[in-house]
Amino acid sequence: MTIFQFPQDFRWGTATASYQIEGAAQEGGRGVSIWDTFARTPGKVFNGDNGDVACDSYHRYEEDIALMKKLGINTYRFSIAWPRIIPDGDGEINREGLDFYHRFVDALLDAGIEPFLTLYHWDLPQTLEDDGGWGNRRTVDAFVKYAEVIFKEFSGKINFWLTFNEPWCIAFLSNMLGIHAPGNKDVQTAINVAHGLLVAHGKAVQSFRRMGITGQIGIAPNVCWAEPYSKSAEDQAACDRSIALNTDWFLDPIYKGSYPQFLVDWFAEAGATVPIQDGDMEIISEPIDLLGINYYTMGINRHNPEAGVLQSEEMNMGLIKTDIGWPVESRGLYEFMHYLQKYGNVDVYITENGACINDDLENGKINDDRRISYYEQHLAQIHRIINDGINLKGYMAWSLMDNYEWAEGYRMRFGLVHVDFRSLVRTPKESFYWYQNVIKNNWLEIRN
Ligand SMILES: N=NNCCOCCOc1ccc(-c2cn(C[C@@H]3NC[C@@H](O)[C@H]3O)nn2)cc1
Image (cartoon, rainbow, N blue to C red; front, side, top):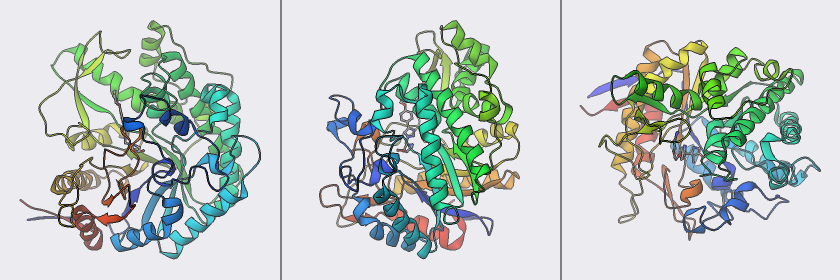
């Protein structure tokens, strides 16, 4: 048996997002989001699943918080649904929406749980998408208005703020690959979206500073760590492009005030350019306080001219996979965190990490050993990372409970808590009790 002790002030949490858990999609004055639209578009989401009900956390949040208390977490990452706050995107403020989140945040604080807020977790008001989405500066300005409303309302209650969740997914998964909402398949559109959200991020951070809001603010990129299939320079370059599009494309503008030139040149070859306006890069590079990092898996990639605009093909190496098909390889998290040091030893929180394991109830229990094994491997890497002197300050498991996994609908389950989507009954899985023990001890026991 090996024991890994974590720092006394290490934050232990779980993460969710508004569209994935809330339901009540037509209640409380909420407006339509791009995910309401996308989910109703035939062929886009497995089984045509949508977030109309989801986990019904809009009505059941007190039960959810009771589960968080039982789990023993001290931090809970969630997102606010913009369409509940300003239903048409940039018009009237919906007081009912603000009141809901005040009730929720107050209940978290009463439970001794630190709120860790994501302002934008993919549920853009449809009216703004109809007018060009993130590529239109109207949406940028609308986001700043929305952010300033939330800053003003929750300053003093919330001390950890993220502007955007997984900008690569918002821009490229959703507008180049078309796999997520709104489903565009155009490289230039994706680059316009990426730039728009970066300008919106920078303007929101400037507002945060100007308004004197409490706490720390940052952004949460997702990681796509990749290592070369062969020792060829071509395969390494293919990995560099994959890694950089998820990370450097967003963090270079924020930390360096410029895009990674090798990728700008790569896209120029494909006929796509970044629509930079005067002053944009100064806005985007407004200093931030922290980074959220979302890690699930890594790839072994090779150069393949037929493999999309990046010409980077992920190879099937026969590794153990989770039920969503992602290889289980925790080593990539360690390698990535050292790669991230090029931006300095910035404060980092793992804001998402978890496994899709679709085990179901057996005699009233869910024996999700594979999820426990995944968490053991990744928390052991977290311990290595901290021991190397990297400022990794906390860890939020994705997810508290099974929820709407976007284009996969409800068939893919990431939760520590099982949700029966017919009855909405929550049942803690064996991994819930395993994580509860890690948090209680503040150490990890690895079975040798
Ligand atoms: N990266 N390169 N991919 C190359 C092409 O891949 C094709 C498929 O792409 C992807 C990539 C990434 C994801 C994904 C999902 N989650 C889980 C959510 N995270 C935020 C939270 O809401 C969770 O539900 N994180 N990432 C899905 C599909």
